[in-house]
Length: 216
Image 1 (tube, rainbow, N blue to C red):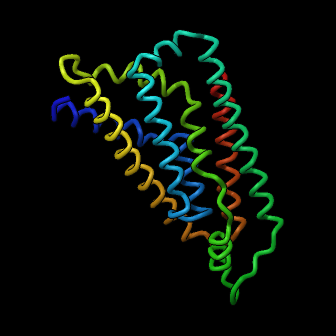
Image 2 (image 1 turned 45 degrees about the horizontal axis):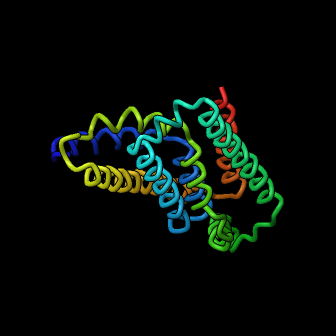
């Protein structure tokens, strides 16, 4: 892959990755609830899943998966079920916070909310983001159709694949960090648990809706 082709590839995937999806929503919601630092595993999990799917697609296995209706549907319905599961879990998590007691320090509820979020246990965000990414059959279809446009058959295949994976990881990292930063600004403006719960429930509905839409 020459430099000009790489630039076009980097710009194209930046546009694709910047389009909000389930992983982006998970990053935003997690940053609001847990903070930026505790949400970093989402980037690693999602990028690892994408790297695996890119490699699988580049090796030709992606074409086999998309050609097999049964295998493709199994992956599709697993991904849809997991989206619904995350949505339901998030909904009840918001309900649990609503039932809990928030101790305001000097009447400052935002401070109490921040302290509560800092004490929240690890929610295994790496696994959640990895599962969201690896069970998305649409990504496999995308990579199978997209990657050949940027691979030069006259050059070393392994080197180009490494370049593609590393570039995707780097661009994905920057994009998710940017969304996390935006979420951090939103979180700083929340003044009560109820406002955080509204965002949690909106996210929950979106996850469930995305899961149901994926089965169509």
